[in-house]
Image 1 (cartoon, rainbow, N blue to C red):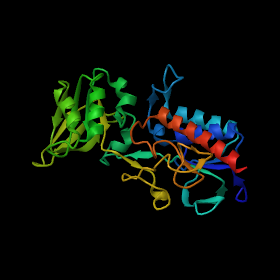
Image 2 (cartoon, one colour; image 1 turned 45 degrees about the vertical axis):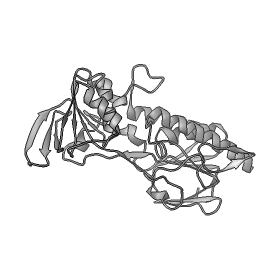
Image 3 (tube, helix red, strand yellow; image 1 turned 60 degrees about the horizontal axis):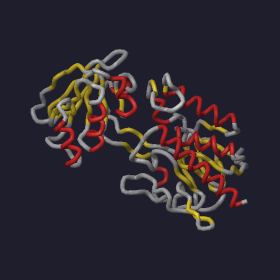
Image 4 (tube, rainbow, N blue to C red; image 1 turned 180 degrees about the vertical axis):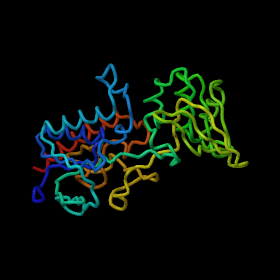
Amino acid sequence: MQDTIWDTAIIGSGPAGLTAGIYTTRGALSTVIIGGSLWGGQLMLTTVVDNFPGFPEGIMGPDLMEKMKAQAIRFGAKFISDNVTSVDFSSVPFKLMTNDQQLMARSVIIATGAETKWLGVKGEKELIGRGISSCAPCDAPFFKEKYVVVVGGGDSAMEEALVLTKYASKVTIIHRKPEFKASKVMQEKVFANKKIDVIWDSEVSEILGDQKLESIKIKNNKTSETKTIKVDGLFVAIGHNPTSQLFKGLIDLDEKGYIKQGIGYRVQGIGYQTATNIEGVFVSGDIHDHIYKQAITAAGYGCMAGMDVINYIADLK
């Protein structure tokens, strides 16, 4: 397989990468998906997904990703459970090195996504998806008439809290500083909402629970006083890190490290929306989208990238 030159290689196996693979294979392109040793993206850490169209009763996040993967493989995609360690975009075919082999492709779709910045405290990792979330639009309905906490101080934290007030009985924002960094407009909305209160100058120091979240320990940064409060849900909103380190210095990134989209290859005056600054390299999903960050939008971007690559390869041939 190392001597094969694929029409396209897709780096990443979340909704964006797998949807792109469904489209490129159905478009008769030979396609290899390098899914990573931990494949499937952020949905592999979620429980019930209720907002992905086509599943009126909801579907478990890992089950949804298994179905997407099976669909891409059904149409002919080759799936590799390995990590890309380096890339060479200096000439075509592009070269991608994994832990075990070198792959060559006429085009590449980068769909490596973004990772939630978690708190990194004791008990957190074990309870992600069991009361701990990073997406209120995804999981807020599960906390109807419950008490939830949001950690963060930026616009994302404000948005999470406001979404949660539509379902939860009470929302507390915990922020490590004495003031928010969120925009004035967002702060005004939060302060005007009677369901929201704030614990200032504090951080979550430990998360407690057996099979699900039960309580959290909070440490005051000024007094060092620690207290434990019972909560039903904890939403972490301290930001995301785009998984773009591999491409730094090779692909144009914005100031936050997200890949710039829609700036590259043009043919017959038509610009490809998912193109990067390198001809033949495309991008889709949360690796460039720091606004919506939903599974369905990532899948949509995957569709766009797949269609762009189909047209690009057709032009090459």
